[in-house]
Length: 364
Image 1 (cartoon, rainbow, N blue to C red):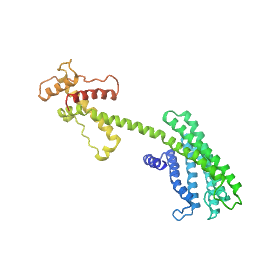
Image 2 (cartoon, rainbow, N blue to C red):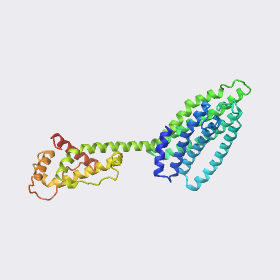
Image 3 (cartoon, rainbow, N blue to C red):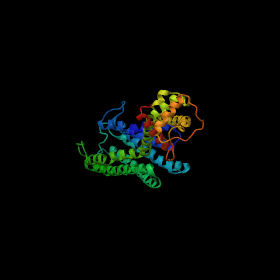
Image 4 (cartoon, rainbow, N blue to C red):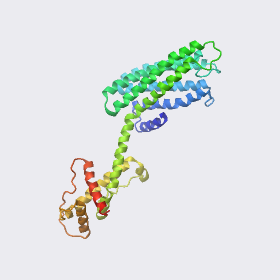
């Protein structure tokens, strides 16, 4: 999920590279995505590119801490002025450096024979305690800010912030469970020859399953919720325009056959790419609506002389036949198929009804 979200955020960042808040969120998701394979390798005791398992664990948690710092920066630069945000970001950066330093020293002090998650080893326990304390502090700060600004925001943004805040609270609770669990594992297994498992490991595994992983998923869902819902709304509009474009085909066909010079013939620079883009569908839809209206304006003098008691599709066919025969008619245009409401959608509904009437008569 984080990898898919990273690709989408990277595409947005490429279009808006100076958006610092977007850069912070992208860095956070990148750290989550990159940390996962290193953590998986460390869990299995495997070497990655010649790196020992404990070094892979160091890279994993080092990236996670940078991700937490990026999350804090996201809220700082989204809610504060640039000067105050930079000052607070510098303070959090100092804490990050201290935490990363503790992780480095603990990782180097861990014996090569020790498992990377054996928290009965003092250096491993210190490693995890330092990481969990920093992450709990950073996620708790972000959760408070997310919930606070969700009350000031509205609509999709507010819902997304609330979902993200719930996920952050779950992550904080998991970290708060990890620290005492590590201490328990350290206390009850110092001096024990068999270190195949620990109380802390069991409790930590439950916290991962019940709190950490659901919290991460909720947080990622909350971060992506506003933009995803906006994109879904855009897809719904695209689908409506695509359907309207096809529904107008019978009306457009009969009008275009009589007035081919009304066609708006601007050709896109990249036709194949244009055919796959949402924007291309919108442009073709708008162009077809305009061309239908232009055709109705051109044929309206002929419609004025038809039987007003007949239905409009029949009158339109009669008017088109008169135009094709070259019959003389006054050049003054008259209103045709006026919409009942305001806006383009009401106009299109009227045109679609006319197109359906023509289609039922075998026209187009």
